Image (tube, rainbow, N blue to C red; front, side, top):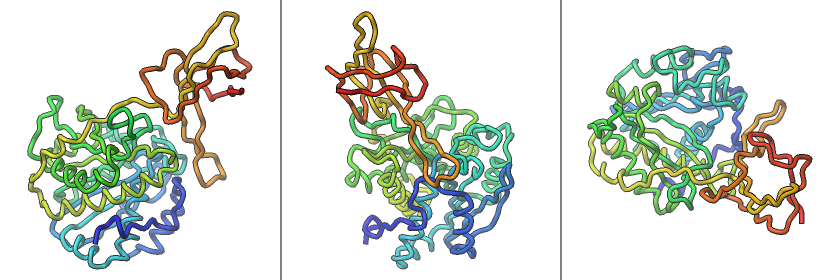
Length: 369
């Protein structure tokens, strides 16, 4: 039986936005035997770690280090929901590994749907400064035992593709340990796992799996963990065409998480097949959400240009789902970029109180026949 055939989303979490309080209540009600509080956020919200498995291979993972990246939290909930329907698969996996999964490392940012924590610190750039409470708890957890692998779980923007055409729905990285990007033994361990995941998913979502840039970031979490000797794999969930709530991404993120854990259980720090990683295309920054082509502005002289628009995700108080607010990113010649939606405005009217679209501002114009 293949995991993709038993995939089942956690029905209590259908929205992309996950309320921290709702998550905490769910964990306490359904997984109380597996969770422990390992710390609290700046605003004193609990940070829970779920521990499952009896195997000798030790794995650490964490979600929502950036509060506006919920796919990994969904994926872990979906993984457990799915495996409950296949007890033999669950037993086979967790008899070989021990997984410590930190849910929602940044609950303050998660509540407001922001990348940063409550005092505007990016946890993924705070490894050395330790200005945030939350990064200290992650580092303490990582130092609590000798982990064989770590999974650093994130999301990426809709701007990325694998080939200029297909979205980078999933991207992976075996992070560098130095500025020279040396392919070390620990990087090969990560590459072997990623290569196995790629082989399982490349037919399910063809041309939609990418390789994230391996530029060395001296203050980031993954780069420093692997530099310190813990093989750390970066996941990035990205765009799925016509699916801004990322339900499709969520499904394949969960499938990728399962096959990563399965590969870890089978490889057990071996590097067999690591070269497959090099076959994965590198991410390319090629798209905007919308491009209006051939827009004729209301100017005295003829002015025809393109207008590129990108959605910003917002969480409004009192609502249980995020909204997508369009912002103007470029106006002019945008031929080097593509849009997931392209609108040809030839012969149409640009309706606005301004002569020109204002950059980095909410779209305040319409296009009419």
